[in-house]
Length: 153
Image (cartoon, rainbow, N blue to C red; front, side, top):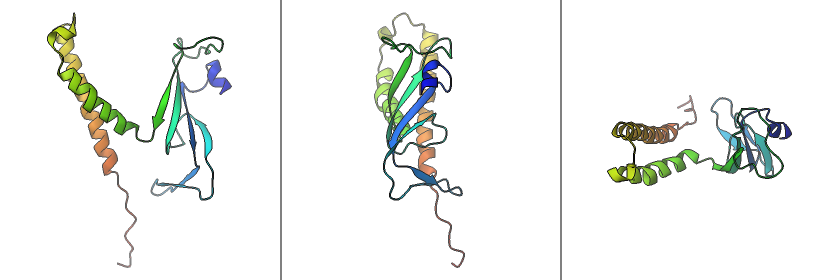
């Protein structure tokens, strides 16, 4: 953690409080280790999977690698928040059920000095992003792994 504050290491870290788990190497399925208690995991998110809720911290220092100010406030240097294993589902809900309807209902006056070409490009990009999130949900829901069928049958 100290190296992260000094500006070395990954630009983001995650902290989970959950039971340790093991991963089946054939199926990729995870299961809790029986009899274990919740533990803190400090990770860059590459190896440990989140199984509940966690928090994230992202270093926003410019230039990259600059240490974080540890005295006083560091509002412009660290972005943080809560994350869960259902983040893609939450993002889909926010984008498609909150922001998209609001953006679609904007009046021409609401765009202010925005040029028509910029508005059109924004709307196209936003629509593509909203569809990509929906496709990600479909992909996650269709990744069902079934147990192998017994050869005797």
